[in-house]
Amino acid sequence: MLGRLSLENQVAIITGAGGGLGSATARLMAARGAKVVLADYILVAARSVEAELAATGATALAIQFDLGDEASIKRMVAETIDRFGRIDILHNNAADLSPEVGQNDHDILHMDTALWDRVFRVNVRGTMIASREVLPHMLAQGRGAIVTMTSSLALQGHIVQNAYSTSKAALIQLVRNIAAAHGPDGIRANSVAPGLTLTPAVRRVFPEAVRTLVEKETLRDQMGEPDDLAELVAFLASDAARNINGELIVCDGGLTSHVPDIAGYRALGKKAAPDQV
Image 1 (cartoon, rainbow, N blue to C red):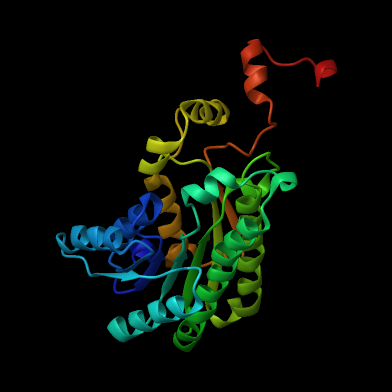
Image 2: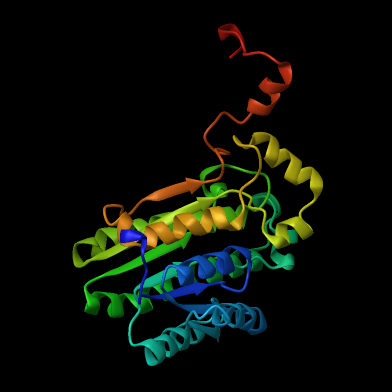
């Protein structure tokens, strides 16, 4: 028995549902009884997940949408209402993770203004619009859960991905503001900060040297996988998390919980003496 973890008959919009983290969350929410809306920029990817879920007897709807286009976001919400009549869950998972952005998102000294604006238009402005558009439906129901994907990079300074990490930090505050304004009305808004996760794209694209650096700093036997994030998102969307609101939960295998030179101390094979700290 799932108890309060059940999502039976709830309608969940998952943005970026055609990719690794989004599709894993869609599968889990569907398995727990939700009717899932698979919103993705790449429609063929969303339809692939839709067909997979339909084969299991789950109810799913693939919708093409562009998180950088306000009209597209509004259409996605309207299509959901037209099909299901309600929205109980919004999982803000989509972001601009295109190769063009990834390869050119440098430190601030070398930041291209157009790239900065593009990342914020999609990651921050788009997520705000999606949240704004579902809120009237949730408020009319007297309940709703918004779970927004941020990043552990939003909590640390870095020499790369400055636009991405800053945009993700902004989402943490957006979530707090939604919870503060609408918590008493039955709306819960929380954010999740993953570390580098072993999605198919990461396995395929990320250099082995970068993965090794992250693995050495992770406080478990391996890096996280999409299912690890899906479990947390589905929990936060459920009534089992009814007393959690306006919070940021880090799910990165302990990556951000320790001093940044822990791997170096481990290499010494002993604890540092007090006068070495």
